[in-house]
Length: 235
Image (cartoon, rainbow, N blue to C red):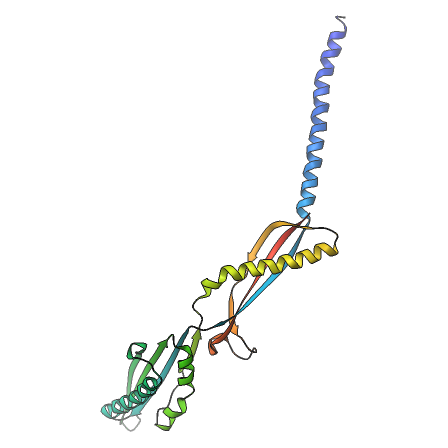
């Protein structure tokens, strides 16, 4: 019996090592299964679009007067300003919606020594009355007939300022769209869609609602668009 004890003592560590190897193999195998499961994923893009109407119109009107006489040029600027204000007031805009956003005077002498003076001024209409602004903008020909020459830098910009109000619903819609595509893929692959592994929200863009010939800022009728990229686990 005493001779068997050393042999038995030697077997115990060996058994412990064997159990450890077996357990390690099981855990490693289970880890590989989980790793393979993690690789079972599909990437889909979801689209959401919404038609909106701009809620802010900004009309900049740039004009100038040029000549040798400063007083005469200023008189022309005052005359043009009066014509522009009359058009805006006639369309229902108040003075607090209209402002002077730039005035500058350039003066130099011609080759013959005579003075050459240019006064440039910019008026700006900033209003929430978007459709009234659109109507007034279409009446620019009246200003031309009164001798007002609008320069580069003049134009109307339409803005949709309530993007944050529509973002949550649009992100949810884009996510649903991506999941629907993933479910179709899973159905064709004889599997099912699990949870989201990773999601990337694209940027929100605002363009013209009708056609692609103009940017969104050129029209009050706009379309907000967002694309999300989502990785779904496949079960």
